[in-house]
Image (cartoon, rainbow, N blue to C red):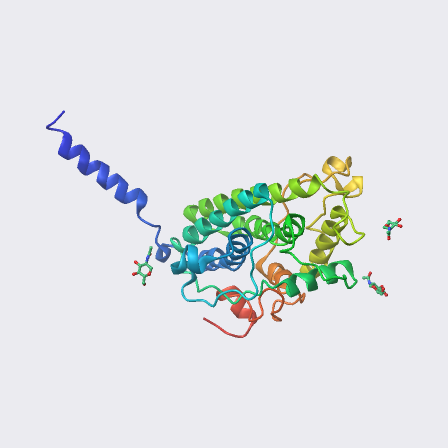
Length: 302
Ligand SMILES: *[C@@H]1O[C@H](CO)[C@@H](O)[C@H](O)[C@H]1NC(C)=O
Ligand SMILES: *[C@@H]1O[C@H](CO)[C@@H](O)[C@H](O)[C@H]1NC(C)=O
Ligand SMILES: *[C@@H]1O[C@H](CO)[C@@H](O)[C@H](O)[C@H]1NC(C)=O
């Protein structure tokens, strides 16, 4: 026993070293690197939005190194949340920090892009989805219901991106990473949708518009901006769009086989810029997204 000790210590250390050693990006193909770096754009957004919403501070306080010196988000605020929703959103915020670490231990990544998380930007998205001018303007930070509706905007888009990226990846470590990210993003989306589904028929104060209608209109807007058919569905749908074409409750979005929809980076850029064009930045990304895929559209090659 004692004689074996140094040897087993050595093998344990060796094992620890091997499993803890970050996977090196130089062994990934260029295409795999691009596909894994792209979602950092969404993960930065989610980390900042959830951390600020729940805690009143973001990555600059929680994990400054992960920003790689990128500018702080514009207009992010703490939201007025009840303790239950605050607890959940805090967990989501820290989960996103983990996602940023996971991606950056695999690929080099890029600094946090400039994000516009001001109420005004969310209000514009909602007005555009509803095709009217809400009065007073929609404020994502006003209460937990508004914050959950605003949270409906991004993790879902992230998850469709992971579904789209997975079959294009060649390296098993890259696929494992994306499957892990997909699992948690989908779970976050499901939690958000469940909390909203509970109040699907309630009006969103002070507007005479139900929660379900907000989600349907946001999903319609994303379908329109994405420009490639229906890949997005609200919480209540015509029964033919529900699971097995049978049911109008649509707590989780899925295709006719209830499989998650996939999106390409191009579709995602069109949606998150709010412009319908991957070469026209705007919305939450006033200067555009980063990484080789996004930059290729902006005429800035890296
Ligand atoms: C963060 O960055 C600073 C400066 O580059 C470095 O000294 C520090 O070790 C880093 N911390 C972590 C946790 O990586
Ligand atoms: C948006 O609203 C305007 C004015 O009410 C209307 O003319 C237009 O048809 C609407 N567009 C859509 C896509 O519903
Ligand atoms: C709210 O909307 C419903 C359905 O669109 C309508 O029947 C009702 O009259 C509206 N109520 C108010 C106060 O505008």
